[in-house]
Length: 309
Ligand code: 13P
Ligand code: SF4
Image (cartoon, rainbow, N blue to C red; front, side):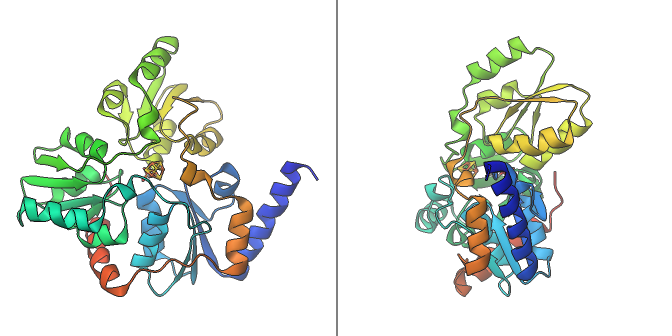
């Protein structure tokens, strides 16, 4: 049997199991193409958190990384949240712990609110005033009364927000190793090769990359921009999983990934086989201790009450 035929067969088996388990299959925009293709909903971290909070499905099958499934479990504790591969983590989320954040809070004092990127553990969220995603970070920060704000764990997102707010932003020095692979010289070279192309970058990229971008947005923001922007060619500065839907939804446009190296190993660890096994064996079930969950939910709920940028 060819690989393509096997993949199609597995896709049908997964869909059959999704129905049998009365599950909602969510897939992040960086997942493998064949997983995105059959998900009920694909999206960025914010859209997926919103869907997880709203659904009345009994089972949420999360094709993404651990913090995403954990957010679903925080928001919907009565549902069974499955993450096919437990090792699908996020190195940036691991760059801060609840203990380190408590120490930082003691240093900052009570008047500096903590804004935590959803790419973080439940314990870290529980220590935070409000969460944010790349789609709403500016709006979240501007919604706060304080003039001084501390953002964690992504310093690049914090630096991006600093450019769009009058508040003083301080930050934890975390970063995404995948987005840090991209060098400004690579974008400069691509721009000189394709001068008419639009450069679209994720705010996890370093500030020198964002300086070169025509548009900075979340992964789902990239779909919206590609659709509405009157250009034929786009240079994309984020993880390569984004290309699947960009190309599918815009067959007449060209999308060039800034560098082929931008592959998040954690986002790619989950295969169709793993998704199928997860539904058959109902694993891995993601849960959060109730004392942590309740506090983390407050930070997520405050974020969800704020409209997207
Ligand atoms: P989005 O919320 O923009 O999809 O980003 C998630 C992520 O992990 C980016 O690296
Ligand atoms: Fe984490 Fe970066 Fe992977 Fe996103 S792309 S999940 S921030 S390591």
